[in-house]
Image 1 (cartoon, protein in one colour):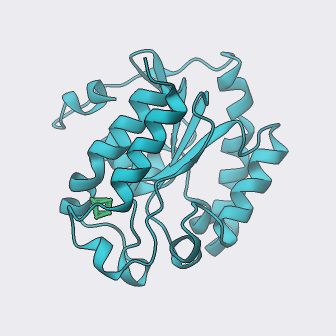
Image 2: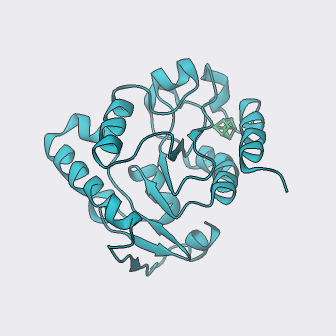
Amino acid sequence: MKKKEELLSQIDKVVRTCHKCRLWRTATHAVPGEGSATAEVMFIGEGPGYHEDKIGRPFVGRAGKLLDQLLDKNGLNRAHVFITNVVKHRPPDNRAPMKDEARACMPYLLQQIKVINPKIIVPLGRSALEIFLKDTLISEAHGIPYKSGNRVIFPVYHPAAALRSRSVMGILDKDFGNLPKIIRGELQPQEVEVENGDKNQLKLI
Ligand code: SF4
C-alpha cells in the first residue's frame, strides 16, 4: 500500500494541473493544502486568498497568522494538523466559491479526507460548513461538535471573519479553546439530524 504522504502528493499533482472549473484561469498557483498526512485534526477553509495564491500555500495571510496563533494557544501547530480549502484555486476578488466550483473541486477534498482519515474535521466558516451541514448558518453551528460516523465535525467561524469583527474574534477564540477537549474526547459530539437536506452529505465523509 502506498504511503499516505505519497497519496497526498499524487492528489497535489493532479490539483496543480486541474482545469475542471474556471478558477484555474485567474489563479497564479494552486493551493492543495499542507500539513501532516496522519493529522488527527483537519481544517477546511473556503479558498485561497491573495497571499495564498501568490505562493501556493494555505492560510499565509492575516487570517493564517490568526489561525497559527489559535493553534499555538491550544497546544497545536501546523506540523500536526492538515489545512486545506473547499476550492484549491483562488476565486477572483476573494469572492466565495460558486456551487459548481465547489462541486467540481469536492473529489480532491474527499480524497484528502480519505487518505488522512482525521478524527476531527474543523470547517472554517460557511462554505466549508455547507459540505457537512446543508442550509445551516455558521452563527448557529459554530462551536458545536457533531458526530459523523467515527469522526467529529467541529465548525467554527473563519479567521477572516474574526479579523473583521471583535465579537466574532471572541467567539472564535472561545470555540477554539474547546478543541483540545474534543481531541481528548472530553466533549461529547451531538448526533446530527439532517432535515430536508442531503442525508448522504455526512456519510460521504
Ligand atoms: S478550483 Fe478545484 S476544480 Fe477548480 S480548477 Fe482548481 S483544482 Fe480544479
